[in-house]
Image (cartoon, rainbow, N blue to C red; front, side):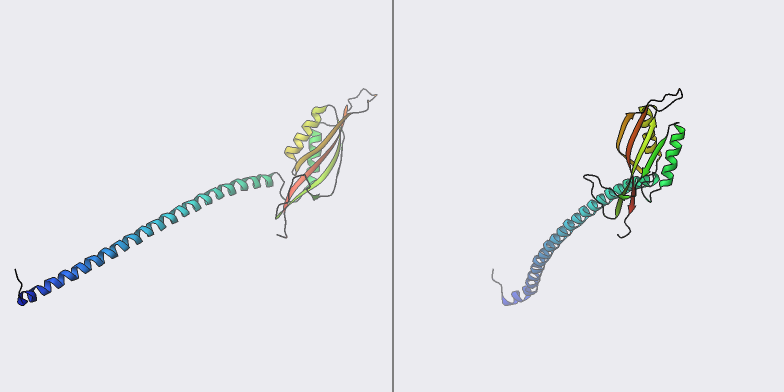
Length: 201
């Protein structure tokens, strides 16, 4: 079948419309594919951001738990008198009270001036000072249990932290009298340890 020029004139608009629609369809397909790629990239970026947010939240939760635990330990140190200024008079009162309660014989002691704590393997911490006062004590005892009970009471009730460095026991000279007399003598060395904040930091 042959088309005349008149027929072609009638078909021009439909053909032009088909060509325009075809070009529009191809263009729409291209843009739709490009849009889908962008949507997928956006989804991947969102998923990555969500993963990072979850990781940060998990880290923050863990840090909050550690801070809470550290705060409890710090408050316990404050309550025990380890953090802050050394309170020697309180410590002396504690020694006197324990001696009276346990009905111990004579107790003599000397307290050296406070110095920076120096223990093997102990490192300095920024912003915090660990201080120690060396105490030399001589106790006259009836038996070994008196010494153990005294140290236990002092560690529990004394405000600074008590570190026992040494205790040497020896027999006390025999008394010729009939009254109750000490049978042992102990020479002990303690460190009274306190923690303070470094004000220069």
